[in-house]
Image 1 (cartoon, rainbow, N blue to C red):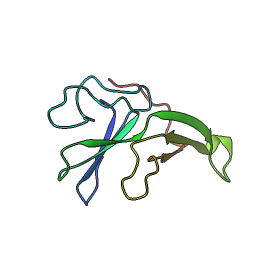
Image 2 (image 1 turned 180 degrees about the vertical axis):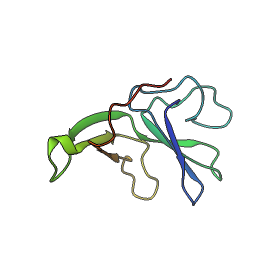
Image 3 (image 1 turned 120 degrees about the vertical axis):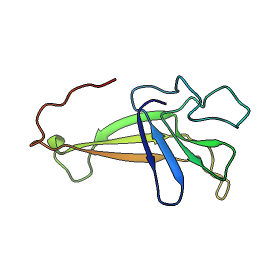
Image 4 (image 1 turned 90 degrees about the vertical axis):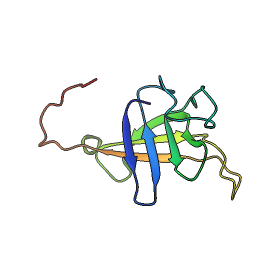
Length: 109
């Protein structure tokens, strides 16, 4: 996907790219034999699985709940791969918190 990546202590790896759906590689893949990436903003990969799951391929932005506009924003991702246990699509909520003391950032590629 090319953006943020984090691996949790339980072995789950999460990839997030809020700038575009999809990736130029197969970071988020349907199965190990597939060369087509999942077209999504975020995915989860577990080492024991032979595939990734979509955490949300539709994006929306809104204010933080109980926060001022300058505090940050909420990013919601909807309509991911249905969870096999409950049959409902996965959704993801990301809280982007602003640090007004951090100064001006730079864009890196």
